[in-house]
Length: 138
Image (cartoon, rainbow, N blue to C red; front, top):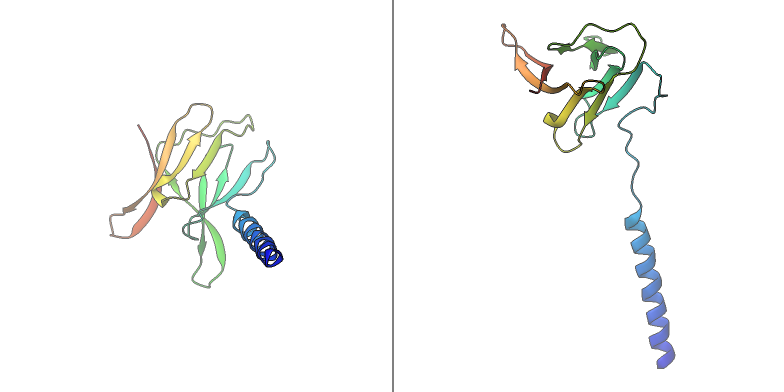
């Protein structure tokens, strides 16, 4: 009888250990490319919505969004960034894109030299079409 309790305890401990290790494993979610420190471009993608896949020009702060054409091809479409300064010619990365993974509205563009920050927002143009752009945070 004692041996049966020991066997059950060992089985339970083994099962518990294997279940614990399985729950500790985390899936790798790729949200951005691993660019070299001097790279000009980087791709960043939201884990929340596929349409928020961006190509960032780290030197100039220009952002393009991955979209589908009418022919169902993929292309990069430039996005409007309000008050973006003229690109400097020193070929230095100075912009970073952040997406929180909690809400689309928590997606930010930041100039890493000045700290100036823009937030992605949706707006309607004069014809009533919905667009996304980047607006400064004061």
